[in-house]
Image (tube, rainbow, N blue to C red):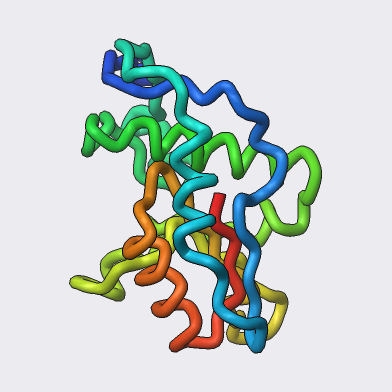
Length: 165
């Protein structure tokens, strides 16, 4: 009997009715610090609808293994909106910036190496050997100003360019 390739779950998620076609904030060293309050306002203002039951599909563990990923059910149902936004960012990159998508490394791929650290949602690696981090991607959700600032300070301390979506 063939293993199921997809899993179906119902979770609460906020619909995003805004286009996912550009980051809310792009920063790179040595640019000045951004306006954290204004960035937070822009992130929060995008969400106009309440959470609603949403059917989500994920790869089964078997499918994830076969494709070089993890697969399995949603681990944090309260973060489905975040995950859907990050997926939309990846799909935007895949369609419009295929080299970025080809060098995309999701957080799950490097989480074990950095236990206890706040990690960006994705790293975009360059072609060097060994590869360097060319850019980090963060799904901003409804970040308040201190959270935007904390993310920025973390990236700035490591001289990492980033996009906050």
